[in-house]
Amino acid sequence: MTADEDPVPRTVYEVAAELAAGRLTAREHAARALTPGRLSRARDLRAFISVDPAAVRADAERADRPEGLERTATELTGAERTPTEPTATQLPLRGVLLAVKDNIDVAGLPTTGGTPALRGHRPARDATVVRALRDAGAVVLGKAAMHELAFGATSDNRAYGRVRNPWRPDRIAGGSSGGTAAAVAAGLVTAGLGTETGCSVRLPAALCGVVGFRPTTGRYPAQGVLPLSWTRDTVGVMAHTVEDVCLLDAVISGTRLPGPPHAAAPALRGLRFGAPRHPFRNGMAPQLCAALDARLAELDAAGVTIVEDDLPDGTQAHVAAAGLPIALYEVSRALDGYLREHGLPLRFPEVAARIAGPDVAELLRPLPGGGPTEDVYEQALTVHRPALDALLHAHLADRRLDALLLPTAPVTAPRLLPGARILLAGRPVPAFPALLRNTDPSSIVGWPAVTLPAVRDEQELPFGIDLQAPPGRDLALLEIARACAALWHLPRRGRVAPCPYGG
Image 1: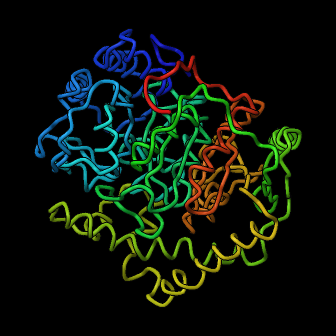
Image 2: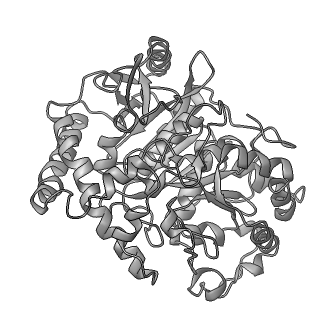
Image 3: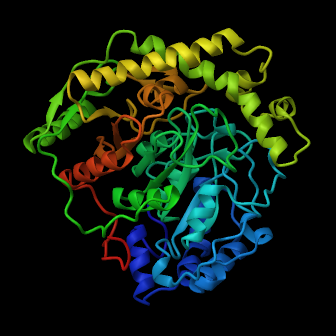
């Protein structure tokens, strides 16, 4: 699963160190990504919906000339920058190549949302999250493929093609941010952006074997993101290491840059993790259960207390009553708001009428008239969602837990069967609910979570372990993830050199 010319994917810190030392320029790094072999690899994986080589080269040239980042409003962001004069060492992401999911605006590139009706939509401004990364020196390689309108878990897109898993092309990459995950895992880019409403960052990251982080809902700005649900949506980050995720999070959130990546990982001794089994392990292969238990044993030996109590009664009922009703009620209204803001003549009914995927069409074409009623939505939003949040908080408080630890999904990357099904415990089941099951509760209540590629199955397919914590504890959770990655000796995807900034 390697890309040509450079088989070991470079981390954000490694790229930055190479550029800062003068051993590489942003233009050279971008040129490597645009070789015929790499572009062919991207096409084979169907990782991108659009790539503009000329724009990539121009952005790389600007990254090599930091004063070039003082761009005009019409050229890039639509807003004036603060009057500062950046230097190369002040650009923590200088030359870093990114994949951006195709529901996040990048000025001059299409934002299709993976759906035919928006094929010609080219926003004039970057999304706020993209602007922050590009102002830090990052270069957008392209818009990553996705499940249509982000409403699915497989990235099987009938309009633009099914994203293939870099480890096994006959397997799915997961969704809805499958293109980003595939591009990062294959080494086509250094890192990438996805979005998550239920599972859409962590699931593809887990199935493709990279780190995936969804922040507390509201930590990252939502301006310029094609929405699904204003209550549940968030942009998320994928990269090869937790250290890379920490740096990208700091740039996007505007918080202090982290220290150098070679700093010692924090201690785990004294922490308490909840590791509920039901329903999160239901249908898991015995070999995966054994591998997960081995990781728990390593934590135990490191001084972590593992509490295997299941979540409180009523948790799954609140998940069912809150999750899909909120998304189905909000999607038509949220999408119309985006279309109006961008001056597009379309509205939700016209977009829905042209949906290519039968699974997405079945869910969205009946809306808004055939969707959840106002009463059902209000119950979901004001009764079931708060009740779910209270149950999860009480579970952690009663057991003095620092985090929950779960399998990100019950399977490694599966084959997609007819009828949008996968095999779970040897039985064909609908893919969407099976793949969404383990991450959905934390997404509904907006908790931060990070998936680590901590286990492999007998076919060497990656399997993710998900760490979840209460809202606002993003940095503490990332430190826990960094400590777990160090304990489990997770590969760093190449040499990580000291970086000339941060700390």
